[in-house]
Length: 410
Image (cartoon, rainbow, N blue to C red; front, top):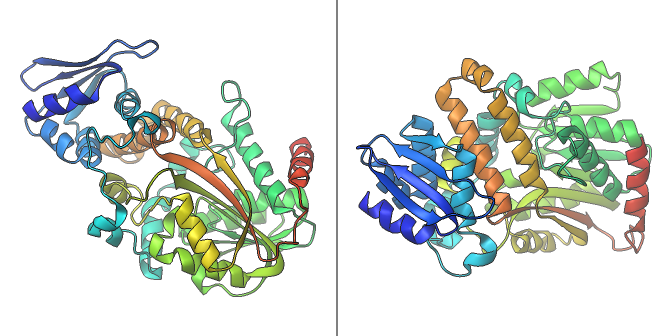
């Protein structure tokens, strides 16, 4: 425990952490902090503490999944929140207390993990999105919106309402008119496409690389009687041809990879009509670029990468896509993930029966770690609006608010 003791004595200042070693000895770190309950963990072997210090995300994630790190008081979310609060982005400055933050291009393997050619992209998507649809039913809203919701009242608003508000927020920015043709890149289970057609009368083509999502999206369109107006295809965005009045992409850009950012925006420009509008909704990273952590890449999102705003801007500018509006959703995904986490925890028996206890702990660690990333770490969400012609949209944002009010009445 020597290495762990030295690291966590420096790390934990606000809040109390007790680590029980394999012999039953207690090691205490930090001090009481208002509103923060003490957290107690137990290690069942000798090597886990040093592995966590050496490779924090991979060491802690695998230890929790494998049952080598046990929660004695508080859950894994409380543990990760305590640790990340003490390394909070706003307060840590240039000091690195636990993990060496290498710049992205200094991490060769981090770069290689984000190379997403077409065959690999499909395989990476299948790894996550082709899991059983029943799993997603247990923690998502009824429309299966697997992306950041939009909360106007986080303390009282339901997840279902916040996801509906998110769809209205995005639709308002697209400046839609009946009969327009919309492309939904990374359409998920079809909820956004169906919503846009139902509320605004547009025709939508949704594309995905997930066979499971494609099947369900088509079933939903058929059940709603709109399959002639809302269509879904299994195709990589790079292989698509045609022209669209609007393009929307929600929660897909995180799977593109920095080597392909310019390709993505160049392709979108070719697909977008001269007077078209595009809305990109993506997780973003504050601060300097860095690769996705090894645990997330290995177990959750192979090939995934969270871009900085400067990386997105640079790629879009290279394709002559004009950024007409930017909104930073700082806390909304944190609130969304908290809802998903609590629903997951409430359905632990069903998830363990569907997969096993190790899978459940992996999923719990993923959601808990992601939530703390948005409240304490470098994560946030961006909504970026693009046009090809600067005269396409009204010169003030008033049209967005007006359209959103009408959509929320619907």
